[in-house]
Image (cartoon, rainbow, N blue to C red; front, side, top):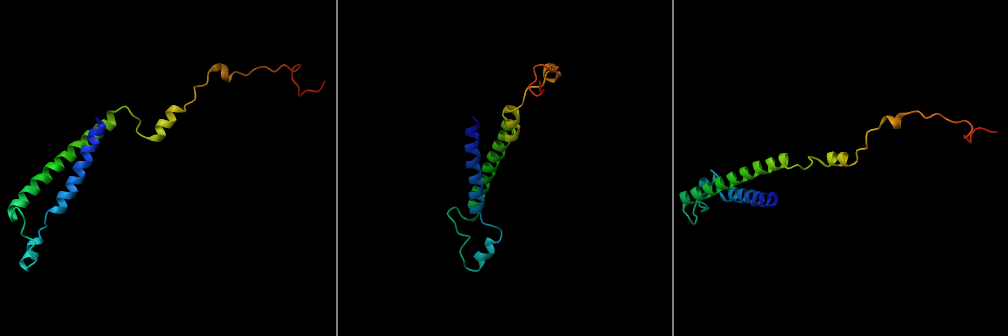
Length: 116
């Protein structure tokens, strides 16, 4: 599920970038006035603006939806939020018990450090 959302998200992001780059800016009409011919297109001046604007709006809506879905999956997915937290959870030592902290009496007869 998450992989499908990621694929749709990347496609939507590439679509938004491509569609924004295809649209002509407000200054394109000024260039056409001096003979560059930038205003002529397949759909006409207003047709291409409406088609590209609608396609961009749809791509942005899909991108926004997938962004929110990925954020939800990341926060409720049960996975660790960082590599450091995952490492800390796997390498935690057991809590010391009272038996570990108890002082054991030393028998001087069994000690090898004391000369006889």
